[in-house]
Length: 243
Image (cartoon, rainbow, N blue to C red):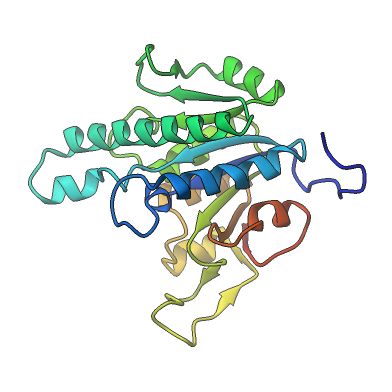
């Protein structure tokens, strides 16, 4: 139940996109349970505000299709392997969230009925209306499309009001702020500027799809405790990619 003194959230339904690497902590590979649990708590803090939440999690902590392809593996096969990695991450996140009392559904674009639901748009919308977190896994179900594109596609289908892109930095910079002390952070930047400057917020297909549907992308630091909830209350440091 929300506190009556808590400000009304800026959005009522959002998509949270995080990379698979965000789940591996400092160990460099796989899943780091304390990190998964910390992110689950961040999601719960927003869910407790009454916000309906969709999620898409990458698979790069387990397998990345492009890297497999670069090492000689056939690209389609490598991409399907990457999709399966996202299902493993989604199940881990579902487990962590249900342990802290947040009902959750993993919904996959590739049928695997024993472990997750198949993607049916109207059913997924109903889960959201019942305040269940929906984790969309297996990308779009097609090779050659990234989880960034999958997140933008599902956000549009679910009528989300914004995409929250959780990263290791607190917004969009003109260059890597970890390597360049003089990097400039943008408070707001347009889709076209992101594409023209190759800023790497999301892949070009995802940015174009967001632009065509006027879906804002909010880039923030997933490592900042309370950052996700703070932005919903109009606080914190972040960048908005807009029309």
